[in-house]
Image (cartoon, rainbow, N blue to C red):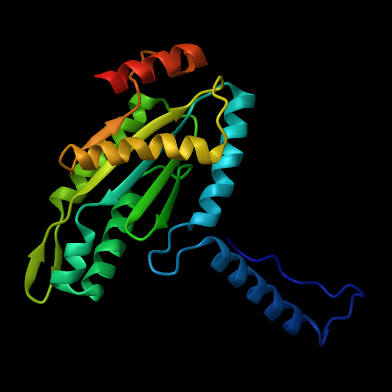
Length: 221
């Protein structure tokens, strides 16, 4: 965004302090970006993710519109680092971040959650739409290659998706754990897949009791 020009508060045409104020303003802006941005990938970091989650959950409770969450994790990342080296591992993270940022909407909040795990907050988004986006991300990652040392290497990712409804009562950590459980399920079922919460025709029309019943049924099967 373009900076607003600084104006001397006493109307002097050549204020000796303006350049210093301008420099300090740039430094504050840079520090603000560092606080909420992951240095390697340029995505939002965990701190900004948790803050945004709480805001979007409150927005869901007020607006009545669902918010979905995608949790994703690069498959066998430790083996990738061991075989190709940490520099290649960093390339894989940057490559994945670029694919995610190039796929999600501007209003979505894409973050590097930590290590090789990423998260995308999807405001005003149903479980069905979020699952479709997660599968598109999965395909984009699996079909792309990373070139290093004259070798073309492919990586894959696993995904867990769930939706937060106006009737839900969990806090941010509890909802995160719920979404993360589907990521663990995707890992356990063979990786490079998307697992999600109970599918419903209309996410916004499901009560908490109905949702608990669906979750129980899903776990039993």
